[in-house]
Image (spheres, rainbow, N blue to C red):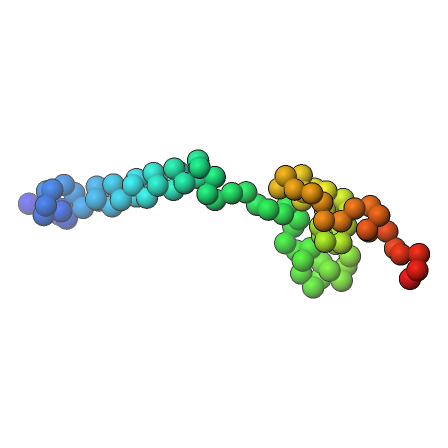
Length: 93
């Protein structure tokens, strides 16, 4: 009798059950990814730009900067949220 645990149903080493489960889950994950269910990152803006430090330092975000808005729009194939005209200071202010 070996020291390796076996599955009583298949008499295969127990590790093969784990590996077959891993392979099955990976197969489902790969199929879902190929169908586009996991998508892409919607906003290429670094997360630090949304932090208190980023906001107070004036780090660009798509909501406040035309160039960042254009980059996010191109990455997500959507229209920009902010245009050059929107990001310019108002003459009335």
